[in-house]
Amino acid sequence: MTAFVLVSGSHVGGWVWPEVAARLRESGAEVFPATLTGLGNRRHLANPGTDLDTHIEDLVQLIDHVDAPELVIVGHDTGIHPVLGATDRRPERIARIVHLDAGIPQDGESVLDLVPDQTVRERLLQQVGEGGGGWRVPPPTLEEWALRGSLDGVPEDAMARLTCLAAPQPLGTLTQPLRLTGAGAKLPTSGILCTSNGSSIALVETVMQFGDPRFQGLSDPRVGFFELATGHWPMLSCPDELAEILLRAAAGEGHRLATTVREQSAHLGRFLLDAPERPRERPRERMGRVDLHLPDDLQDGEHPRSAVVFVHGGPISPELRPTPRDSETFLGYARQVAALGAVGATLDHRLHSLADYGQAAEDVAEAVEMVRADPRVDAERIALWFFSGGGLLSADWLAAPPAWLRCVAASYPILAPLPNWGLGQPRFRPAAALSGAGRLPIVLTRVELEQPVIAATVAEFLAAADGAGAAVEVVDVPLGHHGFETIDHTAPARDAVRRAIGSVLTHLRA
Image 1 (tube, one colour):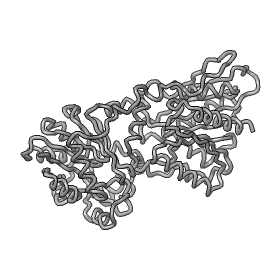
Image 2: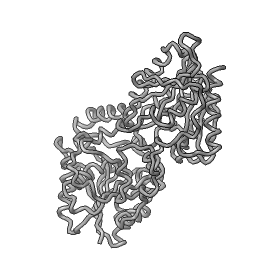
Image 3: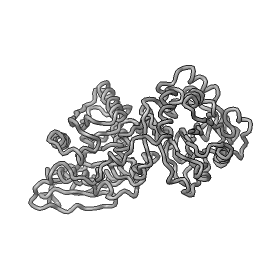
Image 4: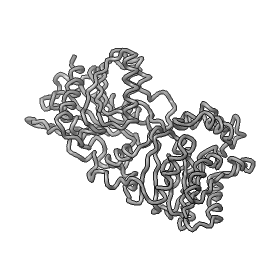
């Protein structure tokens, strides 16, 4: 007989699981919805000392008092923190860990550490001081729930109940770091991804293909994945489907990444255009985080050339090797541009986590000024070309483009924060910035086989561009994938790259 422990996230208790629990029990399973100290009908037990260790001990006690020899423990949202803590203390009792639309916190990370938006963190702490007595986070209002994840599919009455029964969250449960010994690291794991909230198996595979070492463990055959076409609250929006997937997860089913992720990381693949034949290829010049690829015929002291600054995506691990500017994609683009008479500039900015967009924006601005200050560069003729998750960084330049910025390009860009990214600040929203772009030329390379959640951000941007009268040229890549330059060596893909480069250089020379 399978036994499930169901653990919800912040502000919510075991009362959120009744329909899922009923379906699981109908299948013959035992079910134990957990209500942690300070939440649900245990809210009166909270005090200023209630912290993550308190919630971990709640689960340890529950595990110790369940007769079932092995448990499947499910952590939804921030509930994964106490789940992993309890699993680390009782690994011999756990048959499988299920991450239900939840992250993968590491040793030493608190819940607040993983909230990427500084303004959101500051607002939360302000609420603690104003309405939480200095140690509790007031429960979200009906409007605030939408900022914490997609509400797609949640019925109105369920949403009203969620708001009514939500309890203040003890601050210590969000600020105390998770401490793990590694005792539960090798347990079988399942991930249930809610696609309307920005997660999908295809998106995970894309991240894996780009070689980020933080996620290589996801290809372990003991890790299985499932998708639900719903928002962040599947226990409210589709309890029957969720219960069925939990039973399948307990049986060891699920999509394995090991069978689908390419053996060679995408960022190590060969660039789809052959290196141009050049009489003598000048060695690139490295200046801190910036590399310059110079045209062969550029002589010191002669008329400076226009430049294209290529801005990689992310977030990526600082341990990733090669770094983006040494990858085949950016070496390929920079060499093509240099062969056509312009300066190609690449950089490694510090977008290592979702919290780093502000830092990455500063790195890009600093790199641009460094490129413009080089005497071989025409400081009045610069193009910026953004890729993938770097697309959000284009917002600053679209909102108030300087006179020297002659073109903005973007390839398979993410043009709005994904629903589960938790980026509430308006700064990194290119669609909202278009009102200031005027007639600045924008060249957008769009791939046909884009992840739906990313394609939706591109569609939103194009709709805003149409409304603002922005000058957008769309270059389509038939049957192209995200990061197609080292994956899709097809004639249409090669034509798309040539067309995009040609258009950017034309705008620079106009």
